[in-house]
Length: 207
Image 1 (tube, rainbow, N blue to C red):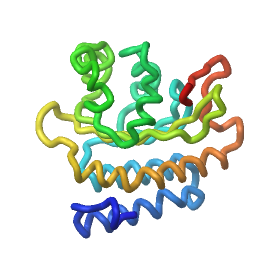
Image 2: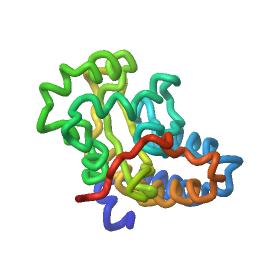
Image 3: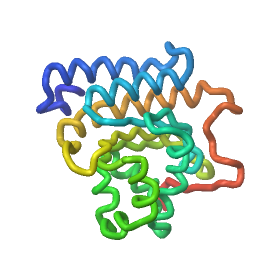
């Protein structure tokens, strides 16, 4: 997989990717899933040169985060992001895009996005500017879907931006992050699973 998808990455990059792939596929060897997530957050941030990283698993409005951002701010993400364009299933769009830059997610309504309360009042104070992410479905029973999401940010409005190198790294890691998050979800006792509240229904499937 690395040889096919990692064109343009240095030997050092590929060595770092291999180490993180190994960690992502072995969540059971960590004390708990939060320690596993924190190890990956630190490792991916360091390898990509991001300023901050975040890893979450859960229903879109009840994501359980391990993040370089302070709680409770990051915990509002799943609820706040849907306010920008309620007429679009933004979580389905996340999943369909796979690894994506923020501009790809919001391209059809970019001017509205950058004027929105979500960007002006939520992302800017957090200094979550340049963004690269990956989103996948962990489990979808048609009522309470569970997603995984890994986000990288730069915390300055100008300067370094995520490019082809960082995208290639995250594209290589995403399948292992997907597999690992599925392992941790299946292994968690029902009461510890990061599900949505019982009244919540969010559709991610087509149709």
